[in-house]
Length: 338
Ligand code: SF4
Image 1 (cartoon, rainbow, N blue to C red):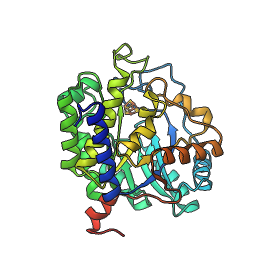
Image 2 (tube, rainbow, N blue to C red):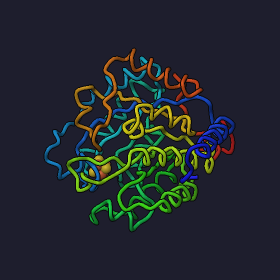
Image 3 (cartoon, rainbow, N blue to C red):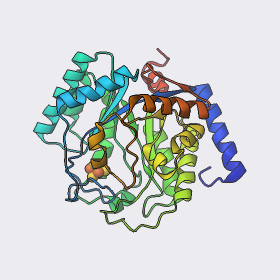
């Protein structure tokens, strides 16, 4: 599946859409993405905002700024948000997250929150769940331990990342992970193994994107092939959809970066989630994990129209006001759909 091209590839994508429509949904679920801080304690070799990149202007939104972003999502009938930041484990940061969640849950009690703030102790995950966070995204980036250490320094721990994914699932979160596609040192067999990894740890959500080099990293001159990365990215979505029919799969920003219509192609390959940008326009350029990341539009009307258009072009229904829980999660936890 991953190597399919031309007609064979078209058939694969069509099949994946049939599987999605039958087992999950024909709606596109929207997640308002709020990148609230680009401060990170880690040094992932591929990442533009890693700690040692001194050229980045660091920022952290205030609670009020974050609430304004959430309000903007809400006014545009997007009832599910993703709060994302660099990784930090210090108490000041975890207290700040508790405060953000408390404030959001007080002012917008029915909004669904996905957190994507990295590896934390189990007790912190438990407290965040108690405060009302329902979903957690923690990308593993590669499921092969040796490959992981070619992309990350040995101050980071593959085993701890697995521990976190396991804790999150045991606590009761809807759990998402994902990998970079066509990353340095990766073989196609790694990607096939990644899909089996997702199946074996029984994820509820997935966000995978093609690797795109950042100029201030050791992979700045990595010679990657856009078309190959795009095709592999789309085939990964289809192969995962066929393997795990009822999970939520995102058509990611990275896909949109390597192709103008990347999100539409992602939906047409079997994805069902889009994460439009709701961070303040002024900070979006400071969250460049990779080069050329699109900053989106500042105008809400343009944004909503573009979301409707991408749904229409991909033959799907815009899921405004639908928090879009993973059906896989509901079946896993309750044995039926609620
Ligand atoms: S990928 Fe995430 S954890 Fe790694 S350096 Fe970038 S922001 Fe930090």
